[in-house]
Amino acid sequence: MQKKDADILFEQQEWMFSYRIGGLLYRDGKLLLQREVGDDRYAIPGGHVAFGEYSQQTLARELSEETGAAVKVGRLCFMVELLWEWRKPCHQLNLFYLAQLKNPDALPKENFRVLDELGQEKHDLEFCWVDLKELSKIKLFPACLKPYLAELPDQIVHLQEKEWD
Image (cartoon, rainbow, N blue to C red):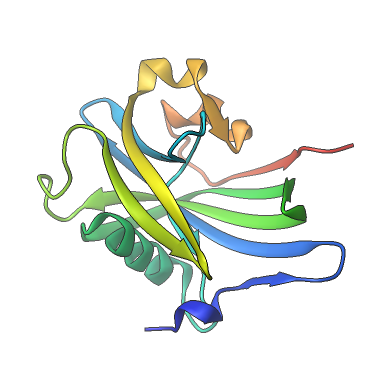
Protein backbone atom coordinates (compact mmCIF):
# COMPACT_ATOMS: atom_id res chain seq x y z
CA MET A 1 0.00 0.00 0.00
CA GLN A 2 1.30 3.44 -0.93
CA LYS A 3 1.58 6.41 1.42
CA LYS A 4 -1.10 9.09 1.05
CA ASP A 5 1.45 11.78 0.26
CA ALA A 6 2.67 9.79 -2.76
CA ASP A 7 -0.35 10.73 -4.91
CA ILE A 8 0.37 11.64 -8.51
CA LEU A 9 -0.77 15.18 -7.94
CA PHE A 10 1.75 17.95 -8.33
CA GLU A 11 1.82 21.69 -8.70
CA GLN A 12 4.04 24.04 -10.62
CA GLN A 13 4.00 27.80 -10.18
CA GLU A 14 1.13 28.45 -12.60
CA TRP A 15 -0.55 25.05 -13.09
CA MET A 16 -1.04 21.60 -11.62
CA PHE A 17 -1.37 17.99 -12.84
CA SER A 18 -3.66 15.32 -11.40
CA TYR A 19 -4.02 11.59 -12.22
CA ARG A 20 -7.40 10.40 -10.95
CA ILE A 21 -9.41 7.16 -11.07
CA GLY A 22 -13.19 6.84 -10.78
CA GLY A 23 -15.54 3.93 -10.25
CA LEU A 24 -18.90 3.47 -11.96
CA LEU A 25 -21.02 1.66 -9.38
CA TYR A 26 -24.57 0.84 -10.48
CA ARG A 27 -27.42 -0.56 -8.37
CA ASP A 28 -31.15 -0.78 -9.04
CA GLY A 29 -31.06 1.61 -12.02
CA LYS A 30 -28.98 4.15 -10.10
CA LEU A 31 -25.36 5.33 -10.24
CA LEU A 32 -23.34 6.18 -7.13
CA LEU A 33 -22.07 9.77 -7.30
CA GLN A 34 -20.38 12.01 -4.76
CA ARG A 35 -20.37 15.71 -4.06
CA GLU A 36 -18.96 17.99 -1.45
CA VAL A 37 -21.67 18.89 1.05
CA GLY A 38 -23.12 22.23 -0.07
CA ASP A 39 -21.95 21.82 -3.68
CA ASP A 40 -24.47 21.25 -6.47
CA ARG A 41 -22.00 19.48 -8.77
CA TYR A 42 -21.55 15.70 -8.61
CA ALA A 43 -18.52 13.58 -9.49
CA ILE A 44 -17.75 9.90 -9.95
CA PRO A 45 -16.31 8.46 -6.69
CA GLY A 46 -12.61 7.66 -6.75
CA GLY A 47 -9.32 9.31 -6.03
CA HIS A 48 -5.74 10.01 -7.02
CA VAL A 49 -3.36 7.29 -8.12
CA ALA A 50 -0.31 6.86 -5.91
CA PHE A 51 3.18 6.39 -7.37
CA GLY A 52 3.85 2.66 -7.89
CA GLU A 53 0.17 1.74 -7.76
CA TYR A 54 -1.85 0.40 -10.70
CA SER A 55 -5.05 2.28 -11.45
CA GLN A 56 -7.27 -0.70 -10.56
CA GLN A 57 -5.56 -0.94 -7.16
CA THR A 58 -6.17 2.75 -6.65
CA LEU A 59 -9.86 2.41 -7.33
CA ALA A 60 -10.30 -0.53 -4.96
CA ARG A 61 -8.32 1.31 -2.25
CA GLU A 62 -10.06 4.66 -2.67
CA LEU A 63 -13.58 3.25 -2.68
CA SER A 64 -12.78 1.14 0.36
CA GLU A 65 -11.26 4.12 2.22
CA GLU A 66 -14.13 6.45 1.35
CA THR A 67 -17.14 4.14 1.67
CA GLY A 68 -15.90 1.17 3.70
CA ALA A 69 -17.06 -1.20 0.92
CA ALA A 70 -14.89 -3.66 -0.98
CA VAL A 71 -15.29 -3.58 -4.76
CA LYS A 72 -14.38 -5.73 -7.70
CA VAL A 73 -12.89 -3.54 -10.41
CA GLY A 74 -14.13 -4.35 -13.90
CA ARG A 75 -13.30 -3.07 -17.35
CA LEU A 76 -12.00 0.37 -18.26
CA CYS A 77 -14.85 2.39 -19.78
CA PHE A 78 -13.55 5.95 -20.21
CA MET A 79 -10.34 7.93 -20.42
CA VAL A 80 -11.04 11.62 -19.90
CA GLU A 81 -8.56 14.47 -20.26
CA LEU A 82 -9.69 17.59 -18.42
CA LEU A 83 -8.39 21.10 -18.49
CA TRP A 84 -10.10 22.89 -15.62
CA GLU A 85 -9.61 25.31 -12.76
CA TRP A 86 -8.85 23.64 -9.41
CA ARG A 87 -7.06 26.13 -7.14
CA LYS A 88 -5.20 27.00 -10.37
CA PRO A 89 -5.29 25.72 -13.98
CA CYS A 90 -5.21 21.91 -13.79
CA HIS A 91 -4.50 19.25 -16.41
CA GLN A 92 -6.17 16.09 -15.16
CA LEU A 93 -6.06 12.58 -16.59
CA ASN A 94 -9.02 10.42 -15.50
CA LEU A 95 -9.65 6.72 -15.97
CA PHE A 96 -13.17 5.47 -15.19
CA TYR A 97 -13.74 1.76 -14.52
CA LEU A 98 -16.89 -0.24 -14.08
CA ALA A 99 -16.96 -1.46 -10.48
CA GLN A 100 -19.12 -3.84 -8.51
CA LEU A 101 -19.70 -4.19 -4.79
CA LYS A 102 -18.32 -7.51 -3.51
CA ASN A 103 -21.19 -7.50 -1.01
CA PRO A 104 -24.30 -5.93 -2.59
CA ASP A 105 -25.53 -4.82 0.85
CA ALA A 106 -22.22 -3.18 1.85
CA LEU A 107 -23.51 0.35 1.14
CA PRO A 108 -26.73 2.01 2.26
CA LYS A 109 -29.45 2.25 -0.36
CA GLU A 110 -29.95 5.92 0.60
CA ASN A 111 -27.51 8.84 0.55
CA PHE A 112 -24.67 8.77 3.08
CA ARG A 113 -21.83 11.06 4.16
CA VAL A 114 -18.14 10.55 4.88
CA LEU A 115 -15.22 12.78 5.81
CA ASP A 116 -12.40 12.41 3.27
CA GLU A 117 -8.86 13.80 3.34
CA LEU A 118 -6.77 15.09 0.44
CA GLY A 119 -3.39 16.16 1.76
CA GLN A 120 -4.06 18.48 4.69
CA GLU A 121 -7.62 19.26 3.53
CA LYS A 122 -10.73 17.55 4.89
CA HIS A 123 -13.77 17.20 2.65
CA ASP A 124 -17.29 16.42 3.85
CA LEU A 125 -18.62 14.22 1.03
CA GLU A 126 -22.16 13.12 0.36
CA PHE A 127 -22.58 9.91 -1.64
CA CYS A 128 -25.83 9.76 -3.60
CA TRP A 129 -27.54 7.04 -5.64
CA VAL A 130 -28.75 9.02 -8.66
CA ASP A 131 -31.43 7.53 -10.89
CA LEU A 132 -30.10 7.04 -14.42
CA LYS A 133 -33.22 8.78 -15.76
CA GLU A 134 -32.27 11.89 -13.75
CA LEU A 135 -28.65 12.19 -14.94
CA SER A 136 -29.54 14.79 -17.58
CA LYS A 137 -30.93 17.07 -14.84
CA ILE A 138 -27.86 17.21 -12.59
CA LYS A 139 -24.53 19.00 -12.82
CA LEU A 140 -21.86 16.35 -13.33
CA PHE A 141 -18.11 16.73 -13.40
CA PRO A 142 -16.86 15.96 -15.93
CA ALA A 143 -19.95 16.88 -17.95
CA CYS A 144 -18.70 15.04 -21.06
CA LEU A 145 -19.56 11.71 -19.35
CA LYS A 146 -23.30 12.40 -19.01
CA PRO A 147 -24.41 11.11 -22.44
CA TYR A 148 -22.66 7.76 -21.86
CA LEU A 149 -23.52 6.76 -18.28
CA ALA A 150 -27.06 5.43 -18.68
CA GLU A 151 -25.96 2.94 -21.33
CA LEU A 152 -22.24 2.17 -21.27
CA PRO A 153 -20.50 1.73 -24.63
CA ASP A 154 -18.86 -1.63 -25.38
CA GLN A 155 -15.47 -0.04 -26.10
CA ILE A 156 -13.27 2.41 -24.22
CA VAL A 157 -14.26 5.99 -24.99
CA HIS A 158 -11.64 8.76 -24.96
CA LEU A 159 -13.12 12.17 -24.10
CA GLN A 160 -11.67 15.64 -23.66
CA GLU A 161 -13.17 18.58 -21.80
CA LYS A 162 -11.90 22.11 -21.40
CA GLU A 163 -13.42 24.56 -18.94
CA TRP A 164 -11.51 27.58 -20.13
CA ASP A 165 -10.77 29.21 -23.51
